[in-house]
Structures are given as C-alpha cells and as structure tokens.
Image (cartoon, rainbow, N blue to C red; front, side):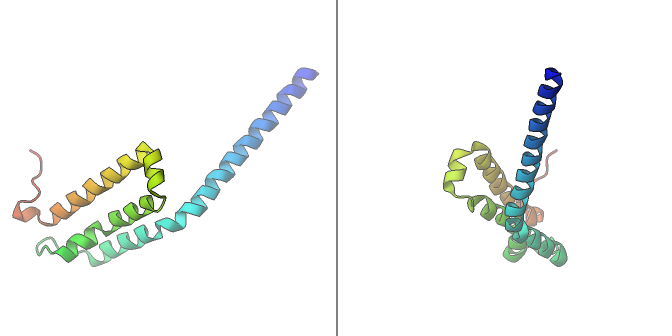
Length: 118
C-alpha cells in the first residue's frame, strides 16, 4: 500500500531528526559543560568557607559573588558579538550583575546596605 510506505518513510525521517536533535543537545552539553567547571568550584568554595555575616569584609563579598562572576565569564566567553545578537543573553548578564550587587549588599545588611521588603 503506498500510504503505508509514505507513513513509514515520514516516520523514519522524523525519528532520524529527533535522534539528530538529541545528539546535537548532548554534543552541546559536552562542549559547554566543561566551561561551567569554574562556577561549580567557586560554589563549592563558597559553601566550604561559609563566611559569617557577623564580620563583613571585601573578601567575604568576593567569595559570595565569585560563582556569579564565573557565570559572567561564561557568558562573556561566547564573545561580545554573541551578547549583541541575543537579547536574552544580555538580559541574563544584566540579571547576573544585579544579582552580584545584591549579594554584596547582603554581606553588609546589618550595616543597613540591604533592607528587606516589608
């Protein structure tokens, strides 16, 4: 039956495309994954040091913001052209910048630099 043959053929093509997309996604993870290792290491350093907020310092602010800085580098490593071409990447970078500022202000929250909402 020609209809069965066409169905089989289109189904085979769809399955091949799905397999290729799955392979492409796995390849993307293998390429980008190692670039995130500094982020994971910085996060581990932050949790291992666990600096108290009772004695705020620039060092504790740096350690607290270091994972976010690593994500900045991850985005910037794709190039300025990438950020120019993708508005979502620019928005993510802006969010990371404000997030690091918020984390830095949290270090000095007892001194009044970060006031929680009412």
